[in-house]
Image (cartoon, rainbow, N blue to C red):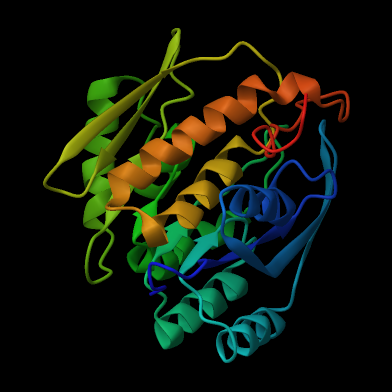
Length: 276
């Protein structure tokens, strides 16, 4: 783990969104904006813009493994964020690498569907994700449809069901040490978006006002990357999640300053650093 004086090195393992709103490019922006040094391993390529995904190309699993091993052999990695991993062989390669290198923090965002509704995870890969990667995560950040898929049931549709789903997901995480589920409630109706955090003993609810905007492309990627960036120096996981949510809310609120595409636009990762 990084000492208190060191700038954290944070690795994102994810796919490439050419529009820059999601995936590796969004992760690198969020990590850098929050004061950490970003490293990246590309697990998939997409042909994508703010409106649609027209193609997905997986990176060979062996090359994904080589990227990770080569990086860890030289660079101290203080936290890892995992996003789009696409196919079962890639998922297993990432899980094997994590078992070898044992990074102190692993934030898993189980990316399955793009904001446009296009699939980003092969159906046959869901089982590998549940069996190989979920147990190795220290923080799991699904939205409600993803939680339903991971549990093999319908998505939670109220706060009571969210609490129960978060507890059940937490039971599937076997990583030694602190383990948390951050179940995102953005799909629930209403003016507030409430997320549920649990480590099996504590249950924390974080509510924030819903911002009326179409610029929500990459919000899940950005939140999980922000958590990974903040974990190495945060006093605990809830503190990192609260700070990450505050960062994301401000990035969404400032997204109107950007003019990117004609669909779901990206959030403004550098809202605190760039002049309006």
